[in-house]
Length: 220
Image (cartoon, rainbow, N blue to C red; front, side, top):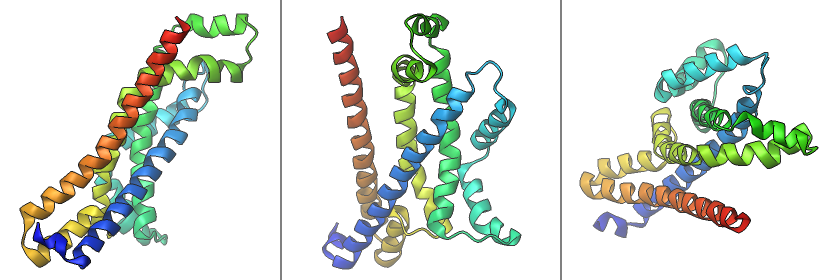
């Protein structure tokens, strides 16, 4: 691990880790924000955009995220639209992640008994209040494990950004290995950093589920 004694390599890892964390957080937050209204829309009996959303979901999950990133970064300039590395990585990863979150939330909504919405209307709750107070909490409770798992996948998936010229953690490790030839040591440190990011997400999942159990026990 003596490469860590070099300030230059430490700075590379720091900058790369910060870029990885930033990309991961933006992708996780934005993909969830986009997936939620799409999932709600899909619950409507006569959703006008159902086929469009289903086609998008299938395409985004069927095509490798790397192919999407390559199309955005290397293919779009042929159409006259050039994206910088970070925006290309963000758009591609959000495009892929949103489809998975959409399906997880859609399953969560569909797992709710139909009588829940009827009961909410009988109690005088409007459509917005029914969504916020009755349906969404139950949908998220059901989809929570899958959503957190996808968040971890996006942290790891952010490494694909290195292939479209983003100087994130994996790109930093490649530079250090090329200079020092210490592949095992460098990759061990990088894997530990990714592990810490994943551990933080798992910790948030544990806190969320513990709070949900506490609230449920309080109501009981």
